[in-house]
Image (cartoon, rainbow, N blue to C red; front, side, top):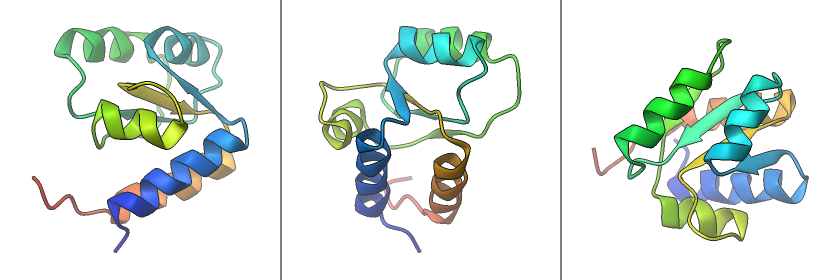
Length: 107
C-alpha cells in the first residue's frame, strides 16, 4: 500500500523535474492545450472551482481527489494549491498507480 507521504514526495519529485502545473488557470490552460496527463484536485477545493476545472476537460485523463490544498502546495514548494496537473505521461502513469493503490484512512 502506498502512503500519503510517498505520494506527496513523488509529486515533489515530478515538480522538480518540471512536469507539473498548479493552480486553476495554469491547469485549465494545460488541459486546453492537451498537455495534462493526470489531474489532482485537493479534497478541500471549492465545488465552484472543481466545476470550472471539470468543464475544461475535453479528453479523458485520470483524475483524483487527494490530500489538502496546504499539503499539495507544500509538496510543490509553493503556496496552497487546490489543483495540480501532471504533464508527463510517464510520471502520470506512475502517479496513477500510486494513487490507485492508496487507501485514505480519513474517508
